[in-house]
Amino acid sequence: MTDNAQPGRVGYRDIANDLRRQIDAGSLPPGSRIPGENDLMSQYGVEQPTARRALDVLKNEGLIAAKRGSGTFVREFKPIRRVSPDRLQANTSWGSGKPIWNTDVGTRPRTEGVTVEVELPPAAVAEVLRLDDGARVVVRRRRYVVDDKPVQLATSYYPEALVAGSAIAEINTGDGGAYARLKELGHGPTRFREELRARMPRDTERELLGLAQGTPVILIVRTAFTADDQPVEVNEMVLDSAAYVLEYKFTTED
Amino acid sequence: MTDNAQPGRVGYRDIANDLRRQIDAGSLPPGSRIPGENDLMSQYGVEQPTARRALDVLKNEGLIAAKRGSGTFVREFKPIRRVSPDRLQANTSWGSGKPIWNTDVGTRPRTEGVTVEVELPPAAVAEVLRLDDGARVVVRRRRYVVDDKPVQLATSYYPEALVAGSAIAEINTGDGGAYARLKELGHGPTRFREELRARMPRDTERELLGLAQGTPVILIVRTAFTADDQPVEVNEMVLDSAAYVLEYKFTTED
Image (tube, rainbow over all chains, first blue to last red; front, side, top):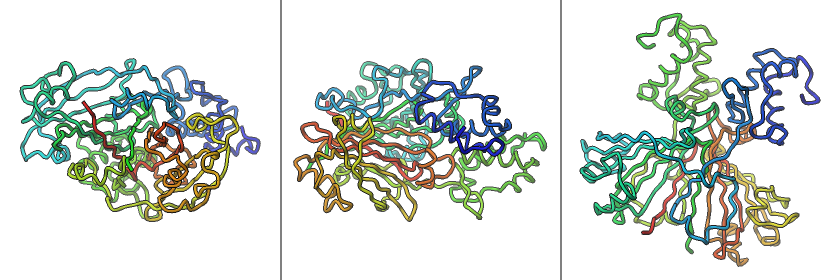
């Protein structure tokens, strides 16, 4: 309890602020257990609704999370690093810059639950791919998983006219994946645009990604273009924001 | 009310789901007014706490927001587009690709409240800038504002040893800004790394950015390197996620 808090006059915000200060200061480090409702009731002299609401504030801020049956803990941020453009990773001139957030360098999500369908595209995707009315797309859906925890949902759209009959329309796209197949078809992508935003998850996203309360999602829409500027793929990704740091590297010419 | 909902048995989740469906379907379009607590109470036959909780769900999801004294409305997403690398914007070969999210192309945030201090850097910044213990930094803080609404907080750190006595240590950095001054000093940045994550805002961030409930922030840490790989600036940005779409463009060599 802060020194100036008086028993009986403590509000849920005071308790939340107090716990947040301890988390920020490191006296409640990542992974440590937070006092429960009963602890807070006796420690601050408040009723249960006040204690519960204080914990809710910190849950909604994504600072703490309840683990079923074992209490409430300070959340850890040990994300995967997703680097773009990926090929530059090998470029040694980029090797030495220390990153601001530590990440699980070795972690690579694995793909799970791949499905392939032929569908009419959503209007926005049809526009980006410059498809005529009624033109269909091959849709590849899958999720990315780390240690059995889903971290990303991804849906890729390819013009059916471009990829019908290729391995892109099969579950297994073969060595080098969809981009290698597009290249064989004479439509290899060489330029990429990624558009990003962040928002709170919809119910379905929260369930599919197993998101804790107070966890936003990052939406990335990646469009792949050929050298002659033809869009050949739109990939819509939904990322668990607690599982990723995104890194972009670029140069500026004078 | 959904057809299978029975008066007296409707929960706050049913009401939230019902309203969310109407928002998704467009029958409650962006900017339209949402029924208030009293409307929901009579429409669904529920008590006030249930109606309030249903609205809270949608506020926490960032789908609706209360405007003081005038009701609750479906939120609009008309963001600013922030393109990296910026110089490529002029490259006509990138001009034609239709984006997935419509953005206010003409909107440029203006800078406000610039302060300049000489300080000891946070440990993480000192590491990224490869500073010795006790080495100080010039810290430039400012916010970006659109139509009097703050959309971004930014804090840039420069090694004091590098920029002392230059306009980078003044409020007004002069034509071309800090990067032009760094170049004159023989430390012009040519390579950039941006690291991104998203999370719910801290109280201070929520206040300074005037964020509605259910609005995450995007954190970007941009590090600028010279051609010989020396880090010369770290810029920590906190963005209102409802105000921005970030766009990155890059090519992949074979």
